Amino acid sequence: MQIDNGSVVSFHYTLSDGSGKELESSRDSHPTEYLHGASNILPKLEEAFAGKQVGDRFQVQLTPAEGYGERRDNAVERVPAKYLKHAGKLQPGQAVRLNTKDGAMLVTVVKVGKFSVDVDSNHPLAGMDLSYDIEITDVRAATDEEKAHGHAHGVGGHNH
Image (tube, rainbow, N blue to C red):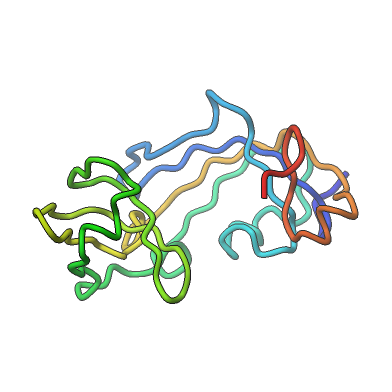
């Protein structure tokens, strides 16, 4: 089956930075799944998957603009520590969820004080050239429920 809108795609990937340093990989775990055509992954990645099929291996290179954007110098903010109590003992470099007026946002802890925490709202991969090494392990038609929900439901259904 060829990947097209409405396909659920399972794949393994290895993500490296511009220098070739491995940042993360799914190869020692379960494959990642997404619903093609539902904007669940980066647009340039989704474009590269179109028309591929099980067993295909390919690489995708992304510039910062095609990935997670350029780093913004003004993205470090000081927030009251009470808003991050749910995250436990905070450490610099730790990624935590911060609830904002626009919804939950993943931020990185920069500095921890007694009453406030400096956080960086840049995506951890912002400003980086990225290289994805991808292997497609399965392609199937999405269920009606997956289409209605706008995402793939992995092993055991959905958890939302």
